[in-house]
Each structure stands twice: as structure tokens, then as C-alpha cells.
Length: 386
Image 1 (tube, rainbow, N blue to C red):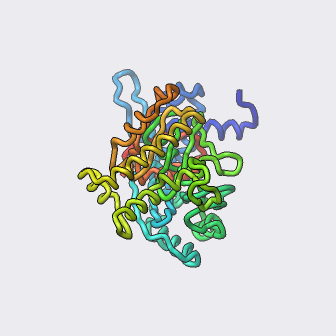
Image 2: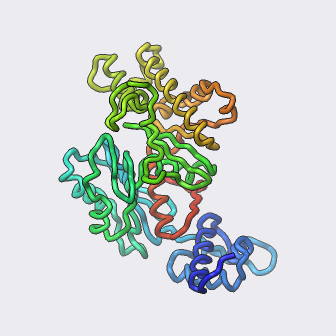
Image 3: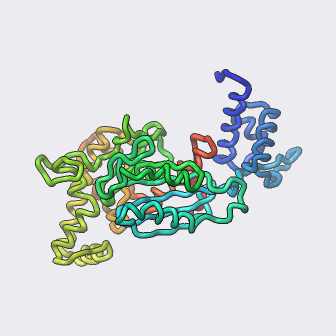
């Protein structure tokens, strides 16, 4: 039973009502009262307050033949907007959306090599996307930054393939845009995106295979980051004793054998060229090229080890693999599943990411929306994203 001041209880109830409207809309006041077990008078007062704040709107009557037709309520997704920035090693992607993860727009630029230009270039890219603030009640209400490295206390503490630890990203952007800025590991954002928009499971392991390998973990619907943000750095688990050097300082780390960066570099070396792309790898694999086949077999081999270890450590409902490998070769997750020989893994579901590159951006959108609204649950699986 919740006890405390009337103001505290009112705030808790207001959050519950708003969360219910967002996740069950369109919905009537009577239906909210029944779902939450609160009196109709309490619901009416809270809803009126949310309407006054322009967070909830009335959209007309429910189609019912019994008695007085109830007025339906919707969340006002146009009351503000949020931004997520995926700071990749080679490319920065910025997504702007309304408060329901819809009406999105996307821009990209190359990641600056010079840290002196990083903040000005990033500010310029974000500013180029901001709509007329006079058109919405609250304007820009939050920015999330997806970092390909370790984040702790809203700062970059370790990033193996770019140097952002010395830059106060959150502070500089908050000062310029006058809005909260949240830093989060890209794999953590990816699993939040999958949970919010695609897969409603309480325990999810999301493996992000890009320049490195990250693991986003939801345990009982809660993001697990460890005591200083380093949980999920699964790319730095050792799979080859005394193996290849890794920027983390260890030898034989997983991401030195199965990351996109490493495998595509190995394929280019085999072909005697400076650079290759996935289109070329796909074409050559389909024609039976032995080098392409070897690259794919190595991906399956090491990802099977990765999935096996994750499953035995965390026992998730589902494992999602987010990689260009599983995008261009959709049958790979099935082959990985077949390679898991342990009886303990016989009921495991392994799927490729349906959100692909947008999972990080959508996860960051989710973080900013929930923070602004003060809600803990956001279900957008039935909404259009783009």
C-alpha cells in the first residue's frame, strides 16, 4: 500500500494514469478507473490536469450502443520531441521523433577525426534538424547519445575505437540546448529499442556486432549495466588464450575474431584489396567463393561460442543478434541455433534484429521520452516508426 503526502500519492497516480493512456490508447476515463482501481473522480481530476498540460487530448466518443458514450483519450505525441545520436566509429546518425517514436527524421555525417571539431560539428548537425519550437508545447525535451564503449555516470569511461573520454559531451550539449542529455552504451540502447518496439520479453540478450561486440541485457524487464557500467562488454571476453592483441589490454578477446571490422578486414586481405563491403561478400558467397565461405563459417563458429556462453550465464527468453552479417545473410541465426549442441539450449529462440541500424536510435528515443514523462514502461510495438 502506498502511503505518504497527498502530493506524493497524486504524483504517483498521475504517472500511472499517463502511462496507462500511452500504452492502452485510445482509452476512456472509465476504463482507466477500472484498470487502476482508482475512483472515477480521481481519474477525472488527473485527466483534466494532463489535458491542461497538453499531454492528453480527447479524440471523440467510443462506438458503443449502451448508455452514454464515453469520451476516448489519446496521448498528445506532438507536445514535444526528442533526439537520439548514434556516435559510431565512422558515422554519426541523428534521429528526431515525436513523443511516441513516430514522425521521425534522420540525418548522418562522418564522425570527425579531430576532437576539437567534435562538439561544434555535432551541435550543427542537431540544430539542422530542430523544427520550429513555437509549434509544440515543450519543444526539445531530451537528447540521448549512443556510445560504442563504456558509459558510467553519464560520461564515456572507455571507448576502444575512438577517444571521447576527455570530452564532456553531456555538459556541453545540455548547456547549448538547455535540455537533459543522456549517455548510454549502444548495445544497451539497442536492447531497449527491441523491447519497446519489437519483442515483449522480460529477459532479453541483444548482441550488437559492429566495430566491436556489445551485449545489451534486460533482466526481469530491467536494464543491467553492472556497478560501473561495464556489464555487457562481451566482446572483451577471452575466446583464444594468448590470442590477438585487443585495445582493452587483453589478448584473444572475442571481438578480435568476429566483429564486422575484423572479419571484413580479413576478407579484404584475402582478396588483396584495401576495402570490401557486404554486397561484395554476399555476391562472392553466393557464387561459392571459398574465402567468403570461410568468413561466414568463422562468424557462425565464434557467434555460437558467444551465444552459448551468454545463454548459460543469463538464461534469456530470447537472443537477438544485430549485425550486418545477419541482415545480409538472414539464415545465419538458424545455423547458429543448430550449432548449439548443449541440451540446456534446446528451447532457446535466436533471431536477427528486425530494427537493425535503427535499434540504437529508437532505444535512445525511448530513454528520452520516459525520462521526460516520468514513466517506467513504454510500449510502442503497434506504432509506425518511419
